[in-house]
Length: 101
Image 1 (cartoon, rainbow, N blue to C red):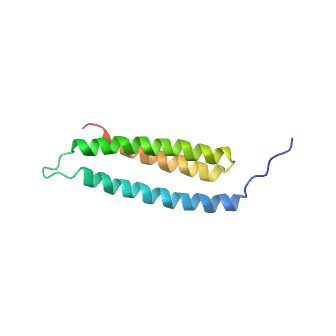
Image 2 (cartoon, rainbow, N blue to C red):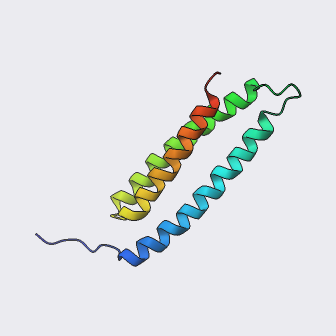
Image 3 (cartoon, rainbow, N blue to C red):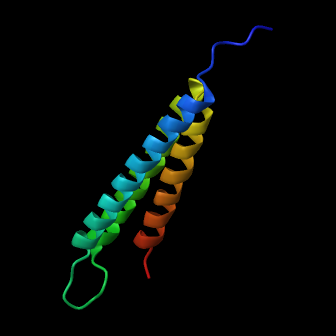
């Protein structure tokens, strides 16, 4: 069997690190947006904040599947794992924030 041409491990590590930084920036920005959506004078969670958290959960989960799966289809295993893990953790974080208390 002949193996197809695969990207080098070094190139995958660089792309994985760049994706890690960009994913963290996106998640921090979304957390900042969640804070603005949940702004209330009495300190309770607002309905807008819960809806924002649920929409963000779905966006991050779909993003993890689409980008991680797409990279895996192109045999970019390290960046694929980074996308699935980081965006998946972000989706679980927003899932916890959006759950009724």
